[in-house]
Image (tube, rainbow, N blue to C red; front, side, top):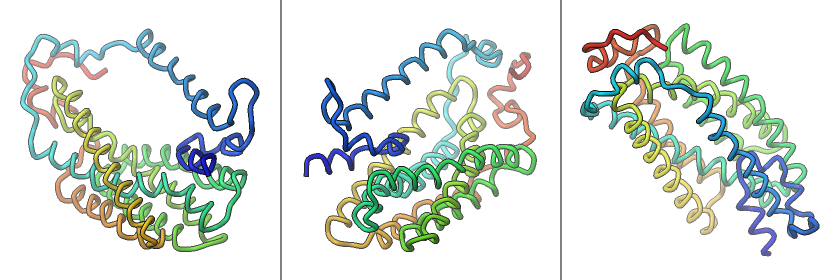
Length: 273
């Protein structure tokens, strides 16, 4: 029982190494500890970034200026989208392992295979989504692919066999397309001196939305509600987020940051990095 509980707490990229969680490892002990220890490798990333990245010319040009007030409507729109989208995304991703084990009876190795086969193609979605967003526009692409990806993942929780695999794969690709189209708004919709603060607030909103989604999904599943019904309920969030994107987000493709943010244009002589 204890090993099964620990297994459920392993999420994300670690899912691909789930078979290790059921093996006893010398010195370390239970295999699930290895999955968490392996995450320490990412501590190298901030060290490399600190040494290699330089400040942009835009930031340097505005370094001595006071931070302009954040645009309330833009911040509210992004925070709303972050909350609504992550209510579903967090629940659908975290409870997928539980669903595959408890409902479909998948062993650890098959859960890893399912994750690799259905999630890896999302990288193609990121590339394609970024390219289309730069050429054709961000707003409609982001809203549409978010809605399609959500619908596909709901279908994955309500089907089995090949249909479940295909739905999860399509959902991963669609959400991959949505990410670059919507993610750039955190930088493009705010002035240079307030961009970091705005991004932090939006990230906080996304974490809160994800927490709400996990709590709601956990309570409903513990009460015996089917996984498919729970995910269909949570899907209301990203579908509403798509509507907010279409209604409140500006189209930022092919526009300079100074055009989108008048506070940057004032006294700005530095070119884009």
